[in-house]
Amino acid sequence: MFDHTAIVVTDLARARRFYDAIAGALGLATASNGPDSFLFGKSAEEPIPYLWIGTLRPSYWIEGSRAGINQMHVAFRADSEATVRAFHAAGLAAGGRDHGAPGPRQGVPGYYGAFLLDPDGNNIEACYRSNA
Image 1: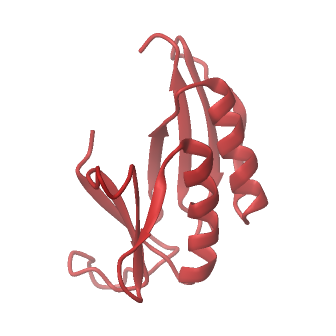
Image 2 (image 1 turned 180 degrees about the vertical axis):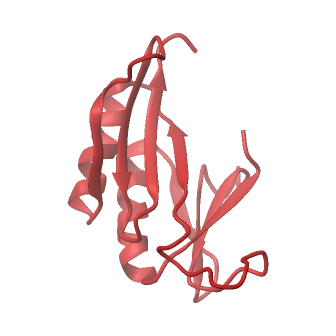
Image 3 (image 1 turned 30 degrees about the vertical axis):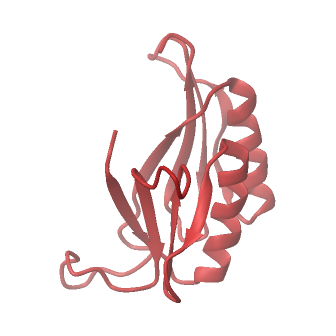
């Protein structure tokens, strides 16, 4: 499990709507982190791991980087196939784009996942492993 990671977005309000929607479906939460960012994770009581989402240019970016050009993939663990479906529906309703409908994935026994592109094109997944 990761400690933290970050996604830079172009429109914080639009991103917040999307991540609030999928957080609710996954039983996670978002929390404000100042005027230029928010956190996506378990809860205030269990703040780590988290995904930092904001509009600030990170110090670790190389020259030429910008939101929407350095897309990343983040997969969140779901507790059931129904949760994966709820994640997908909530994300679509909040402005996400389908990048893989809920269903089993070939080559990984017991794996059920769904993929969305957030408003900036980052590949966000929810997955359930029945054999985990």
